[in-house]
Image 1 (cartoon, one colour):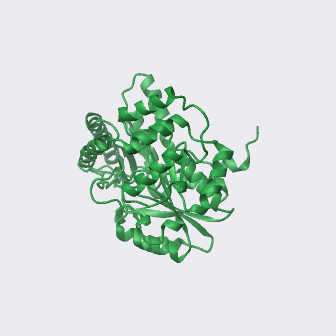
Image 2: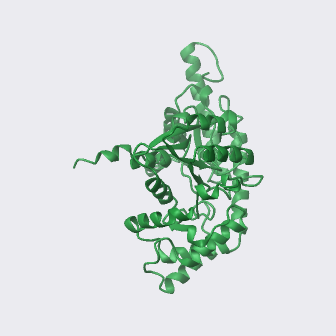
Image 3: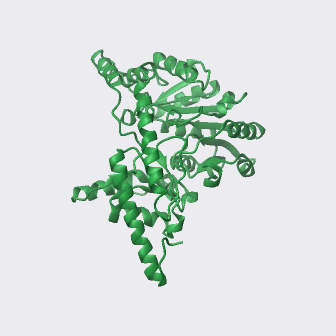
Length: 403
């Protein structure tokens, strides 16, 4: 069959491809340390699981309202206000099976063919993929290490054109772990207001931060009426497999987005929405414990990477990824990704999996045990030593790296 031309613009997530390769190696008897997949390695807290079981036993196995149950939409509205992010009415909340549909629905509802979508690069690859698939034109906004892996508002404004319709923000940031400051948000909000841009603020990692208050463009006066808040349960509550996300929309967008839900997935499963309520309204200690464990792992992997010649690694402020700079090794990121898996047994991602500005970097998820992270660090250092020896042999001199 001949595929529709629109499929040429639809990308994928490299993490799943690398996971499949790693699992194939494991099936052949190889030991692999998994640092490629972006999901918490913690179980969903028991009170959430029990809420789902109780809902199933109570017969919550039928259709519900397309934008979500009234009870859950009320719970989400109370939650985002309680956590200091946004005051919104429950009928502004839309619940979806996973957070990605909010990206799809936002772009489909707002962008005509040729409208430009500004997105962070490096960044979550679905931003560019969905924009292209919808017929919009994705425009990369560099996220640079020298700026703390944060968008530079002045550089952002230089990329705005008369066709710019939507700006996507992500903080804390995947893959780099940077987090916008209040000053950043104020300056970015001024750009959005000056050019009449709608903003999609992806805050799925908001709870996983390591100091300081979460900053959002929604904190800026006048931004709530032009901003969609994107969040979900996957990262905060270790619920990736439950497929639960939500958006908080300006009122005029709720009805068109609801129509898109009806035309695509009908609704989000009833029993999982009961579990989602339990997560938002239940004890917060499991989240605190998970974040504390991530903080310990972050420090282990950052300190370890910075001890390896030719690698430098900034200390992330949020999420559970590091984005080490490997430019001094003199090996393209994609080649290094492959050699780490094939020779060192470490599954990670090339920075270029997240955009062209990711060349010279790797993304490693530290959603794994401290012991496994230390095993990975030893294996990475051994491979780097091999690269250094190969570089020395090629130049006829000793060198500690391939710069």
